[in-house]
Image (cartoon, rainbow, N blue to C red; front, top):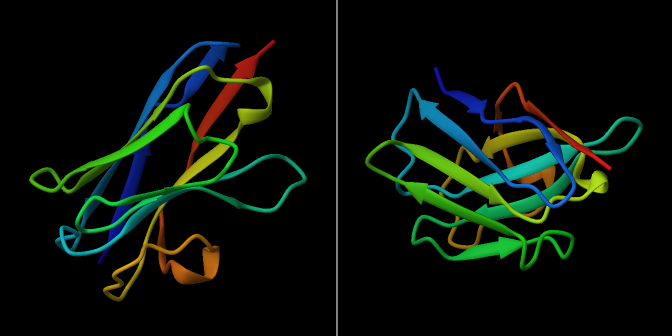
Length: 125
């Protein structure tokens, strides 16, 4: 059974940083893409960043230059380093993984089959 467990969320002031982690179990993910999405209250879940099995990356415009996604295949873990945080970054952040191998990591929720429970990120102004 595949499990994704996020951690690292919390309350931070505007301009601060957080590093989210997502530990995967139940399967070896080193040949699969991994991604981060987020969902703010009253809004749809949106793409944040994704990383391929070769560590090529994709970012939403909202996080370019501020967020960095990375992975440690030995630990079956993906990270999201978030710098220069803004109040509009406040959301629940979810880790996601696909069931099938893809060369290019997807950026839509329908391209991912496994989801974590989410971790809350709150940025105060």
